[in-house]
Image (cartoon, rainbow, N blue to C red; front, side, top):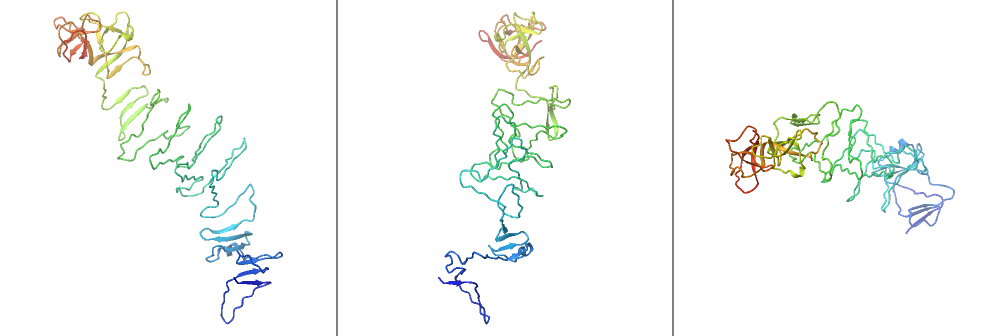
Length: 426
């Protein structure tokens, strides 16, 4: 390798228009340039003076090369040029706190990468009376592009959270996340592009998983659920409970309005008013087959069962008992198996465990016997001498108020059986 020693100065002469280049290591102030250096300058009294220029001159340099180094006389800093990143300042100021800096850099001003199992950065405000944040992010932009955010988190692994917040003090009363929007935008937007939930809320104690309220003079809705996918056949809202409480509770505490209104294409078709009365445009359809009313009984309610013929009790008002005696005019109805409509004088939240549903109109499975002869479809039925059991009536003996109803099935068996009867006491 050729080495050129220059003790004081190196002069390259150009003559007759001929330019020559020599490839060599150059040493200034040393006869032994470092093997790793193309230019080795050694001095204990002088330094290397790079080009000095103003900020305007520096930024006006045409097509600066990667690694170009200059001294900016305006900012009093060394600046280097990096292709793709632009000019960067070599800061000769020590990093002290509090620290503040302003710079323009498209790919970002700071990147910290930790390849071990630890934090890339950790910030803490350790002051019991502090009202400041450990980390504050702010973006000043007129665009709502994805990523234009005060804080932007990315989970690029196979699991991991893009953002996680933990209020770790069990005795504390702080919130996990607070979102406030002063403008017209949404406070929270959640979107799931695969099969996960857009929002998943769980509570492991006595609070609510979700608590939404409208306060003050606000005029908006507490919640709005909509389906804009016209071919989506799934339920808009689905409530599922495995506990023992109500699946749904609507509590109207206002002075006007309905508990519920149901619409089709914007037209109300059903509603339940504040008093609990239901209104249905096209009627109702129930799975039961009779109209019944809840009545108290004189004896132990456990001794009664569906199909019992019931009569007015003479010892207590608004009470029934099993019929006793043939052709009784006290007969009132039949213990209903599955009433379609159940009437009662009790509030809806009272469980009528001490009352029986007495069917008065409709098809009801009824206890019968053949004491009055074999029963055929269409026969009139009256009470028999067997408690709570009906029998075929003799039309010649029937008086007003004795007929329970008409048989819808034949019966000729021994003892007591059950057949469907159209109950309509006359």
